[in-house]
Length: 71
Image (cartoon, rainbow, N blue to C red):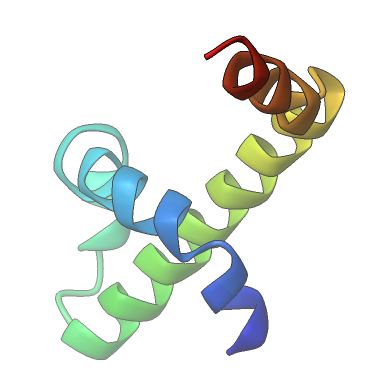
């Protein structure tokens, strides 16, 4: 749960795209709500990890600090 909490904002922001636009057929394949929830959560966590990796590559924290300092 700690890992999910760390990425909760990214999960929240992207879960709609995942289930409504990109992976709808995969997520609802079984028509079982529990399995659909777990599948959506897995996809959301994977996307959140990818976003975090991109943030590390572009040094997002440093860029954010620079923007705040110029303010």
